[in-house]
Image (cartoon, rainbow, N blue to C red; front, side, top):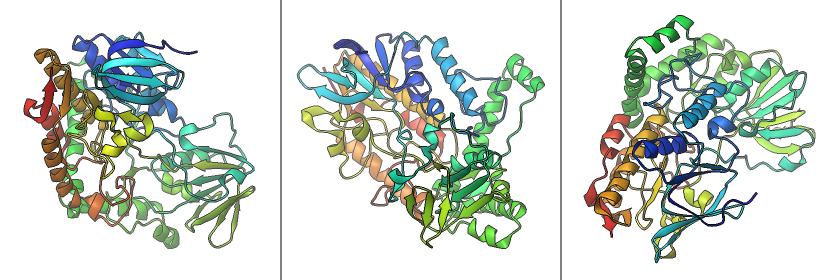
Length: 490
């Protein structure tokens, strides 16, 4: 059904995951009521709506992986399972009145700035057209499935799907299952599938660093105390925050500080994997932290089940009956699961953004994806990115970063309101200075100096994804927009 062909709102938010929901709530609390949330799917939740694979859960402790203004004392486990996080987000949206603002089934196809009218035009796939004074992209980066470049993917004769598009109608019991990938999704999927499949073959390109997952059920008595004792839930959140924050120097300052984490991971591997041959294949050859550190206490045991094979030979092709590796061996499979992550793309690729003077965001980013504070881009007035370039984290909750960015967006909107101006956009000199300093710090960080390749780095080896420091440092730098860093026009 086609939406209103010419709807007008002061603000358009794209996406309804943590970023979009958080932005909408913040706007309402700040007195901005004329906004709309455009969501391509049929419900709130973002990645926690889409990823429903077996074993899917958070790898950040639940008390921290939530909005600071809406603590949840009722998490069932220290690391919440996907259904609870999804329900939490839907509950937040309903509690803070976002149902009347959202338009489901609206996939954004183009975002275009009108120089004359000083308005954005947002076009959706169903023919909808929205005009707005400001646009906030909360679409995120980890939502377009990535598939390996392997010949013959379309030739597979069984059932195949990506981990983020899990087909729950497929019964894995007694089947031969192949899982390609050993990243964050795979270490959760493999133990769950291994318990059902007749045969499970796991294809590994690069072994991950794994540390124990200290997941426990939260007792009813503790949940009751978190609900009833003043300050208990907040105190637990702070304790977890500072515990995780102390890991930041190892990632961003000196990789040698990662030695204790590496020792923990090696002990974990030695205790759980006794076969020296298998242990050698599971031992990474790069500095811990260079790729995402994974948490699991049941992945290694799953690989040693009699019905599970770990294959480290490269995949040469996929054929109707299974997967062929470089040694010429055919690994037969009935079901093929791609646990191969996501295409980390820019907003330009997904949203087709055109700014001042008809310049596309893809053109502005031709030399590399960057933004001022990861939020605003020169030449794109009243356009804001949540979870934009270099705002991801390797050590703590990204929800903290989202909330910091939301406060920065609100600060910019308040400048517009206070000065009765029509546009605000980042100035080029501060943007250049900010990103040059950022990259100088990143060059010595473990993600660049750790001896690996990851999705954090672009084709030129430049880290365009992560923030190189403490999260509280980012919060301090972004909580208020500095008027001198922006061009504000009437």
